[in-house]
Image (cartoon, rainbow, N blue to C red; front, side):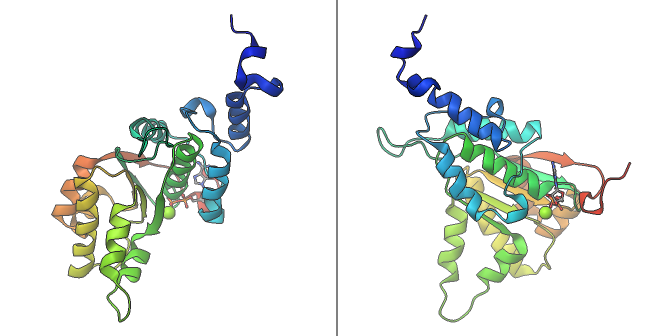
Length: 233
Ligand SMILES: Nc1ncnc2c1ncn2[C@@H]1O[C@H](COP(=O)(O)OP(=O)(O)O)[C@@H](O)[C@H]1O
Ligand SMILES: [Mg+2]
């Protein structure tokens, strides 16, 4: 049996892993659902991530089993850029979170992000709604929007919220295609939300995008009432 006094993780009476698990639990991240791993200290990373998460979703929890599976899969594929370095999110599966307005899609996306950060792997991430993305990428003087598109396309983890909700044009379809195609080709984990039924999504984003999404994402369907309008039966 292990003598706790000879286990360096137990110095101070509480093991590092136990302490991290306790702190994660206090932040409503169930340590059992994430592979609390080789992280020296995921708590600081979690605080840094939470500072960038919109206030409403700062304590969001990934309470859907498919989201928890996604966290495990992405964490398992994380790789260290060099020997001894911290593992970073590289490739992994993607999720398409589908459901009506207020069913908790954005909440679940941020919850999954929090779980992933809490799992201890390094995550460079960006979150945007499709509408904001199109606005940011509108060609205009003095801004290299091509470079901006490349940066979003290459970010290791992208949350693309409300796909199909913005007004579309040939230009938005092309931007969406280039973004999704890059992430499809490079197997980059992406959390996409939409309140359109799949048939309408195909119409809105076009066949090329819909076809890639069908292959690269696992679909998570959220049902129920609009949570913003209070509880109903
Ligand atoms: N699982 C959940 N537990 C607690 N609150 C939730 C949960 N899912 C969503 N909410 C809350 O319900 C509201 C609507 O959720 P949101 O994710 O914004 O919906 P959607 O993106 O599907 O329109 C928000 O205030 C959100 O914080
Ligand atoms: Mg939303």
